[in-house]
Structures are given as structure tokens and as C-alpha cells.
Image 1 (tube, protein in one colour):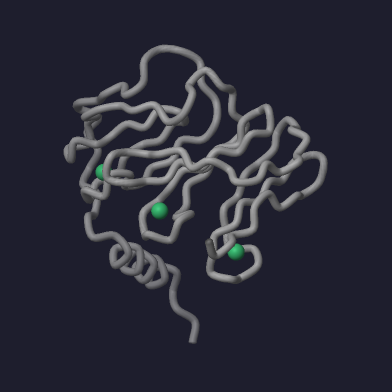
Image 2 (cartoon, protein in one colour):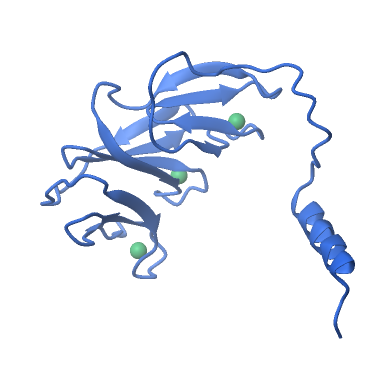
Length: 170
Ligand SMILES: [Ca+2]
Ligand SMILES: [Ca+2]
Ligand SMILES: [Ca+2]
């Protein structure tokens, strides 16, 4: 059966609506807020519910902007050392407690894991340093590469694809 294009559009719209509880209303561009100050930035911005209060917060590493529940910034915290240049960062549940944690790859090759807990994000020290030659334009990915249920840290760069950390049960 071939559905007319219009029906397909409505079907997609319905599926899209089912996926989102809050449908957006018309944007009027009425009030806006610049959440960051003037300056130069690069890199991705990620939105996730960092403090688990039901609204999305914004991570523009190393700055984490908490949402006040009305889409405006409530407070800002700095993740790690703001002076240290980073190459890439990613968010995933690294410690398996169901909240998103932050992992960053610094330009000097350091990998830092910041675990999400009720008081903020705490740095987890690396038990073993990975011998890794930093490269420009490296990307950091967080996924379970060896399917053991523990999130792994994978770095891709111009020098190949080393796996930085395979999850261990302890
Ligand atoms: Ca939140
Ligand atoms: Ca977590
Ligand atoms: Ca794993």
C-alpha cells in the first residue's frame, strides 16, 4: 500500500508528537537571554538534566549552566580547571548510577572523569594513566565497546583509534 505523502507527513508528525510531551508553541522571539558573556568559544554545547530536577541544563565545557525551570540560568558552575585547554568532552553515565557524568579529554592527553552527585561534579582520579600521545582534532566517545555493561572511554584521533579505558568491575 502506498500512502499519500500528506498521510506520511501526518504520521511522522504524530510519531514526533508522541516522542515529546511538550509540544512547542509558536516562537515569538519575545524575550531572549544570552547565557554566556561576550567572548570567543568553540566546541559543542550539550543539554542534559545535570541536577535531575526535570529541566535541561546546558554544558558549554567547562561551564555548566543550570536551568531555573523557566529556561533561564539559575547558576553557573565550572567543571574542572577552566584554564586547561580541552580537546573534546562527552556526557554519559560512567558509574552506572543512572545520572549523566562528564568526561573530558584535555589537549595534553589527560582524561578527567567528573562524576555527578548531589553536591555537583566530583573528579574521579585515574587509577592508571593511559600512555596516549595527544593529537589535534581528537574525539572522545563514551559507549560500551566490549558489551560488558560498563561504559568505556574511546578516543579517536589522527593517530588511530586507541581505546583509553575499558570498564572494570571494581
Ligand atoms: Ca536541571
Ligand atoms: Ca552517573
Ligand atoms: Ca565496557
